[in-house]
Image 1 (cartoon, rainbow, N blue to C red):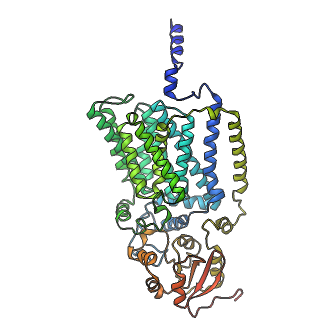
Image 2 (cartoon, rainbow, N blue to C red):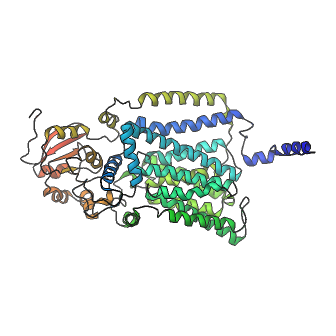
Image 3 (cartoon, rainbow, N blue to C red):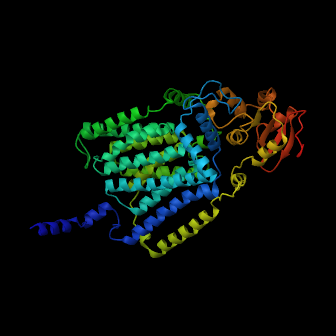
Length: 532
């Protein structure tokens, strides 16, 4: 009798044609080659993410001032700091809300050098892609619309939305941890909202809040799902697989409340809340198109591709609106608002939108992933790409100055040679320099033991009027801004600098330049000659 029961259960466990159709075209269990092709395709997307920092990117300008801030935190203690990197910054204590990530960055840099920073950037990008793919699979299984090809396409869309914004800085670590949080939520929904692992979101939020302001998204996401569950309860139409009417709402509401409290678990809390208000309402640079990541996500030719993918995702959700739960609509809507706010929120949108794209785009056949020529081509691409990454990874003998400018132009480089010229030929007098925004962090790291910068990428560190004069003022305004500055030198881009003409009008002269940067000296200042 037990044997007959086991055989009966196994027989009924085999998916019927109808069930197979609900699960997706071509079950991966029935076609092992499809899984091989799927894994190779996802591995190729991971390889693309890893290749970006090693083959195409340079280190992010912000990473250098994050390193300097970490040094100040070690010296002065964990808490608000009075800035000493820029002579134009506010004099009141400011809040380095990403303090834990900055200390981790400095630890990586000190232990493994800048090569370790490149490796960590690559690892975070790879982990982001894998978590996106895992989230896509979870939501498809929950909706019984499994398609490995859909997962590949949706993960590729997430790469389009996200890779340009990933770098060696706290925001990227926060993005990876938020992708982990989203996967935990999606997995819990697939498991009928009974998974114990979802409670790990509470300590994860406490960790995140010491890494980046975007930690607020965890309680927001859970609040959206709680509101959706409440709507389902009020309409008395709980979806299949929920733990029961009312239970889902209570569970999400408790989680949202606990994660909201965890968001407050930071020694930087008062300053962090003030910073949130300032960034949203007072920061000129956040509301301007000067910084690339602050522009709309659809800006430029590549942005049009992103916009097309967004519209396809929203269209797929609308076409399958009967299958979307209320919480999922709210979840996606919240992230769409973030996306429309700033381009830099594209990776955060991708965390939620990619799984929905995989589940609600037209379900595609996995047959291409089972074809031997496709599998072979993917394997060859992985092999060739992997070899290129390995051979191009910086060795301990690679000089940082060479690495930073290896792709310039067209990638933005750094004034490494200009800094060396200043080190060798300029006598410190005032300890001040004039520089452009993007180079402030690097120069604060490279020359910060002797000189303070004019400006750097910490937009919260300067009054709004200062940025307006720098970026929106005319020639006379900028000339007046630098006229009374007692600076020892200026390091400016050879092309496109907003300060070259004002300084020339004030009698400054070019003492040295190359294709990337130039050094200008004030009137009556002569650079030392080598050997003097």
